[in-house]
Image (cartoon, rainbow, N blue to C red):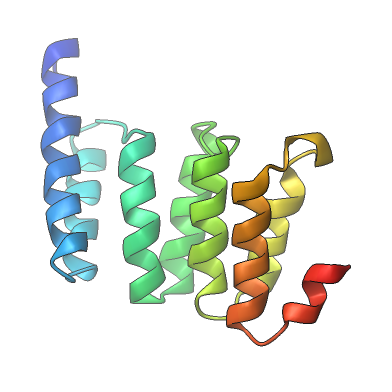
Length: 135
């Protein structure tokens, strides 16, 4: 297992690679640095998950999405509103409203901020269910 400084460098390097793939519209390739990190025993951070959720929204592979969601949940990252809103968007892009709602309802009502509400409403709207946002 690498030292603390090496871990930070590995995370930063992987984050840069993933961001490059996401921004150059190669979402499938963005998963490789993530899997390499796991193989090396390096845990991804919040920023990496945000990038991966964005990539997975374009890949549209529900199994990958659910596995990443579970991993982020296990690391305690889903309680972050930005992670949750990115998850909502990812699931909402291709009609997995059930999973979007699941993420949304994991938050207590008093913690549902404007960003989270907007993400949920956008997910409904993208799938032609804008009226559900009024419930």
